[in-house]
Image (cartoon, rainbow, N blue to C red; front, side, top):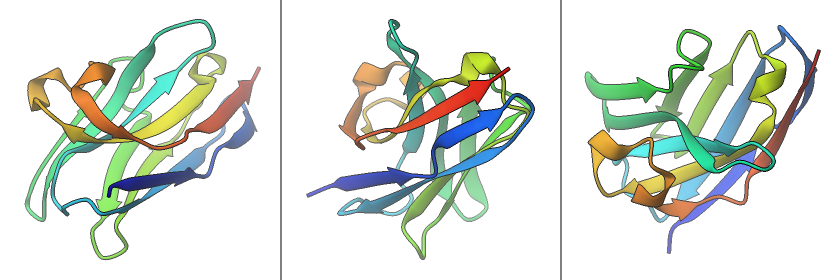
Length: 126
C-alpha cells in the first residue's frame, strides 16, 4: 500500500522560502514522483516532477516556478522534497505530493498520477 505524507507547509512573506517534504512508503525507489498544487477555486496543477535516480534523473517544472523551485529526493530516507525560493503570493495553494505517474510526458496533468498525499498548505503574503 502506497502512503505519501507531506510536511513543511506554512505561512511566509513574499520573497521567502519553504521546503516541503513527502515521506513515501510502499513505493518503488526511482519511480516517478512529483508535486501538484491547487489554488482555491481552481483545478489542481502540476508543479514539478522527478523520474529516475543517481546520474540518470529527469526533472520537469511548470513555467511559473522554473528557476525558483527545486525538486529532489533522498532514496535512503524515501523522502521527496520541494525547495521553494522567492515565493510569490500567487504560489499560495494546497500542495500535494504525487506518485504513480502513468505517462512521464503528461506529468502536468494531475489525473495521470495515481497516488496522493493529504496535502500541506502554503500561504505567501505580500
